[in-house]
Image (cartoon, rainbow, N blue to C red; front, side, top):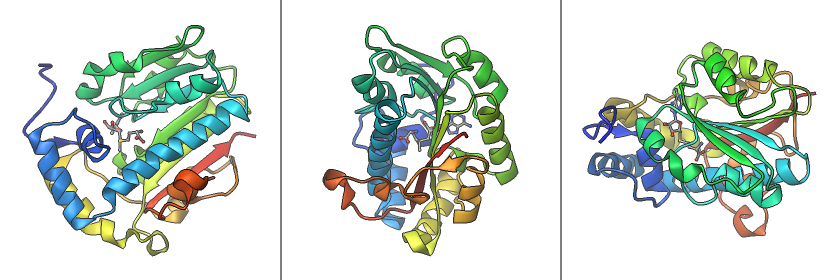
Length: 263
Ligand SMILES: C[S@@+](CC[C@H](N)C(=O)[O-])C[C@H]1O[C@@H](n2cnc3c(N)ncnc32)[C@H](O)[C@@H]1O
């Protein structure tokens, strides 16, 4: 086993995989995952709504906005409908760079590198807090002079300092041209989304698991999209973003979702 992989403490990528019904997790991840669910029973629904949002947002970008390049930071473990599968279903020539810093994601990355012929997928082992490294690595696969969709789903919540999180987003979006997009999801405690229940769950997480997490207000979430044109329907529960009949009537979950376009 990769000696960076710790099985004595729950890791976010593995617990998220557990909530999504995956098998790539350890007893410690399942135990903490179950305890968090005890505090916040809707957490599994958040994970599923987040993935469904990814599917709708990436399909929109590939099919309607003509985006052919995707930089997915905080990828998570391979699951159903990974970004390249969604994008390449619409556009087989789409090029995708995945980025995560969890060693378990690295060991499973091969399952993400199954590009359609004509397209490309690449994996970069890097920390979101080093956007320059991410951009330099991504430039080997993506043409950063052409539009890129930057996906940061459920990851800025692991950058605890809001100014640092904003600066990461600004650095990434400054490096890509007009027509690029930023796709975001982020947990919140806002009562408008029923987020209060998340508070005890996050406190428990921060005592027993890694990496530590924070929630953000609507205003903080909105600040990540500063300078971008936020696509309809704006900043909403990710479960409600352009929801269709199949998953749309879905309950609101305490996770903001939005897509912004660089003008
Ligand atoms: C909640 S999961 C979300 C996975 C996927 N984006 C989704 O929406 O289903 C967050 C992912 O971010 C990764 N992550 C957390 N902090 C990170 C960091 N500082 N740099 C890179 N990846 C990070 C975790 O390893 C995990 O795979």
